[in-house]
Each structure stands twice: as C-alpha cells, then as structure tokens.
Image 1 (cartoon, rainbow, N blue to C red):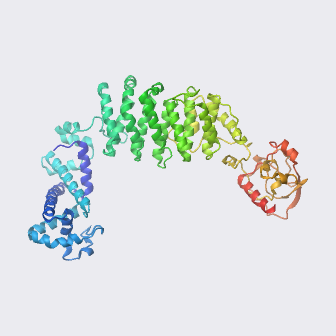
Image 2: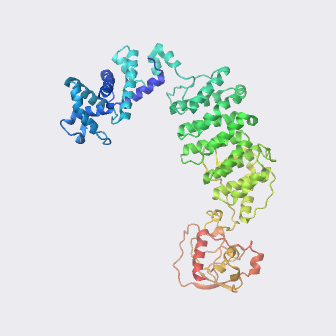
Image 3: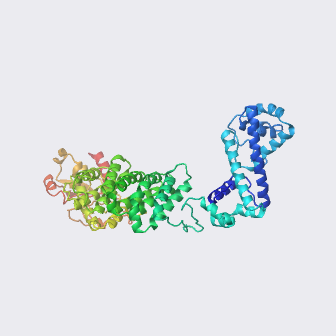
Length: 619
C-alpha cells in the first residue's frame, strides 16, 4: 500500500482527532496500533455474529454494551463508564439490544463473550464516536480501518522502530515528511496532481510547481478546472487548484498568454461560475481573484470573440449575486472582480447588458446601487465609443437613459445618486438632452456634474469617486448637497446634516411659512392671509432667505444666517419669560409668485415636522 504525502498528513490529523487520549510516547503509539488491529477484527466478528442471528450489527454492539454493565445497573440508568458517558445519547430504544442478550449468551461461550465485551468497552473509551445506529457503526468501522492503514504504513516506513514511528506520527509539514521518507519521496510526490501541492511553512510563502510547457499547458488547465468544479472533491483540493491556476496565469509570459487564453477560457468559464457562486468564502474569494487576474491581462479587443464574450456574461451573472450578501469577504471579492471586468473589458456591451438585466431583476437596494454604479463605470470605461446606436450586441442610449430616469425617481438616496451619475455620463458621452421635471433633482445633477467632470476622462479616478479604492466598501459616493436645494416630495436629499440648526419649537401657523412652505397651503387659505403675521419672540431661530436681518433684542424676531446658528446649542437659552408679541410683514400672493426662488424658507427636517404638528392644532 502506498500513500502520498497529502493523504499521510490528512490521516495523521484524522487519527489524532478521533482518539479520546492521543498517544504521547512511542510505547503508547505502539499499544494504540495493537488495539486498532484488535478492534478491526472485532468489527468483522460483530458483522459475522449479526449475520448468523439475523439482526443488525449495531444491535449486537448495543447488546454488548448492555452486558458489560447491565448486571450492576439497569440499561436506562447507566450514566458513565469511567470518564466516558455510558449512554452517550438517549435517542433510540434499547429494547432490541436487551432482548438479544439471552440469545447471544446461548450462542457464544463465556470466554468469547467476555472478550467481545471488553473490546466493546475499548471502542467506546478509545474513540470519540458514539455507536447507536447503522450510520454510527459504519463510520466507526471505516475510521478504524483508515487509522490502521496509516499506522501500518508508518510502521513499515520506520522498519518497526517505535521511536522512528513516533517521529512519523509527530511530523507537521510536507517537507519534513518527504525528507523522512527518503527514497519514497519521489513515489509519494508522483501521486500528487501537477502544481496542486505547495508548501507554506511561512504564511504567504507558498511555493508552486513550475509552469508546464506551452504544449502541456492547456491540458493541465483543463484538469485543474475540472477539479475546481467537482462537488465531490474536498474544498481544500479545489482551493489549491484555484491558487495554482491564479499563479500560472499571473506568471505566464505575455505572448504565451495571448496565444492560449482563447482556448483555455472555454475550460475555465464554467468552473469559475461554480466557484464564484460558492458559499465557502475562501473558494469564492480565490475564484474572484482568478477572474480579476484574467481581466487584468486579457486585452479588451479579445472580448469580442465568442468564448470570452460568453464567459463575460456568465461571470457577470454569478458575481452580481454576491455583491450584496452579508458575508463581507464575499461582497468585497465579488465587487472587486466585477469592477476588474468592467475596466479590463472597456465596458463591453455583453457585460453592460448583464448589468442592466441584473438591475431589472433585482430588488435589493444594495444590488441596485451597485448595478447602477457599474453601468456608469462601463460608460466611462468605453468613453462612449460603443453606445451610439442599437445593435445586436449593444444597448441603445435611449434604454440606458430610461433606466437612469427611472431610478432617479425611485429607491433610496444611494440608488438615486448612482442613477444621477449614469445620467451625467450619458449627457457627457452620448449627448443625451432630456429635461428633468423635478427641480431639486436638476440642481443635484448640476452640482454633481461639476464634481464628477474631472474624473470622466480617467476611469480609475471615476471608479474611486463612485466606490472608493478596490477592496474598500463604500456605502455611497460622497456627493455634497447644495444649500440652495429646497424641500421636495419628502426626498432624503432634504435632510441637511451639514446645516447646524437649533432644535426649537416656534409657534407658527401653516399659512405663515412664506414661499418655502407654499406647497403646504391650500389655495383657499392663500386668499385670506392677513396683512401682518403674529409670532412670538423667543430664542428660537427662523432662517429665511431674501429678508433683512433684524438685530436680536429688537421688537422683531431675530433672523440670522446659516453660518451664525449654533449647531449643538452650546449656549443654552435663558429661561423664557412672557413672550412679546411682534409683527412681521405678511408676504402677498403676488410677491410670492414673482420671487418664489428668492424668498424660499429653509427649515431643518425636525423643525419642519414640529411646525406642522403645532400648526395643525391651531388651524
């Protein structure tokens, strides 16, 4: 029997983990080896007895457990056998095992029965496995067989010297194991897949096998790709295969890479879809890293060819499912991979089509935000060269404009910001001219267009402006909001965290809010506005544009600019006394209609809600 180094190290860890008390000396290891041999024969005998008595093997094992302690303590009251729980798990009925005892005593001699009972106890006290049903019995039997194979191998390799055998058992890395095996090292190493093993004695210091020749490269890539996509393979082997592929494609000379990538991508397309959609974060991250490596080295002109364009669509579809998951590692990796594909393919139409499809079919706010950002990045990466008209592989500018207009009016704040970025890019590169109905949105587009204009000629700078540097999740692009923007439709942009406003409770009627609150006053109320408006002079602050500034302490309310308002209320107001009635000139409906923009009143959101609440009680 031969074992390669990977299997030897795996069996070593399994053997160590299955024992309640692992051996710590050479003599203990030899004793354990002998016990494992006896237990292997014990399980064969149990199957033979079960076959003769026409019962299941696990029932025979449970009966031996009952005989071992049943004479002193009843089966249901058995608790512990030394340091090991006797009952282990009260799940299955023991009626069959108890009824089997008379037949078992009759069929076996006392000497044989006592030996079997002792071996049953040894199984329980030696191994960390309970045996209640057939699955437990089969698992224990297989574990004993594999442990015995491992012990037989290291015993033969050490020429049956206990000290040398113990050194094999204690070895911790592949290099040391190969050195101890000596002449068998080449045979052991030959069983491993080419490039699938690496030694990492120091973290980050993995050493991969040399690159195969160009004639063998495609075959090796195909084999490792099949290993990556195989659900029957262990996760560790799949991860190693992905790491080897990433190392190879990073190290390939440019000329060989360009000659062979068209053929090899057909082998990688499907397996990378499987691995990028994995719930295991390690495999998903490595698959995304490989996709990013390929995207960084493949010339954008090659994406127009069949295999690469098909792979681009597949990868986009599976990666979009990971950008909004709660596992941060997966979200980071998939986001980085998509952005690499967008930049590397220069915003290929197939990738853009996949992003629009993902946007239309998705409902998660973060997915929508990301898709809109990726669409804007595609447009900048292509510099508008591939979006002049409708084609079989292209999206019409009108369709993208419709998408931008749709999401500027729906979704949360972050989605609307990304939709405005798409609209700004379309305006720059596709010459889109479309009136925006909402004045506030129009003002935001005007301001954000100025902020993004410098980055539109540099895809890297634009990517950072939208998402931040790769590998760093940003909740939203950092666009500021102009103080000239007034409230509209209750949108989130009306919240001005950068405006410091005192938390106050002015007593103001709904009709008295002037131009800034005109949308709250019905036409019938506008006709009966008085010549003067009564308010009470307090320490509260009203911010009104287009009105003169009155000094504090006069017979009129104090009107101050935005810069003069205390954000935290550091100087607390004095205790209020009887308020003094003052009068402010009322604004006529004619003047309000003419100078609506000039006299817009701006309240903080919390102050506005308090005004509406108090005004509703007075009207």
